[in-house]
Length: 160
Ligand code: HEM
Image (cartoon, helix red, strand yellow):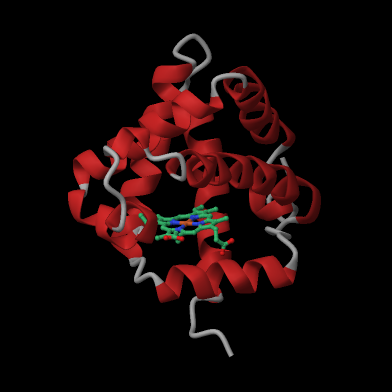
């Protein structure tokens, strides 16, 4: 293992993330919903951040806009695992990263929300692929998520 490469993110770690995501992909809608319900169970106040939940009369679990955000978190964390191994850093296109930073800043997302979301993400994966789950898989997803969040946070400032 060469720690100077990929901030220590190894081929094995990338493979663990990619393998589990391939197994989960077909159920991503259902998983995405479960994932966000977990976040709101731990941190009910996080619901207030989402304009489409605030202004909506349909029950939370029926809101059609919730799944896409949940799936974005899964997909982008998985992509960040691939990038970490290949490039040693998260390489979401800069314009996208700037937009993501600005959006999350604007909606008032804070460190605690990212923490709760990490916990819920790992729990969701553990329940989705129990036969694959391992401490190594947990730390691979956790690290890919942390690095992605660090890149988003670095751009969390008002948009120009
Ligand atoms: C790795 C972590 C995350 C990723 C990849 C992510 C991704 C995204 C994406 C792609 C959007 C669409 C808007 C845009 O592209 O600018 C978005 C919007 C948003 N995200 Fe996230 N997000 C993450 C974490 C979080 C967390 C932890 C929260 C709060 C619990 C959150 C709350 C929001 C809100 C409130 C919006 C705006 C939704 C609206 O239109 O009302 N995000 N996010």
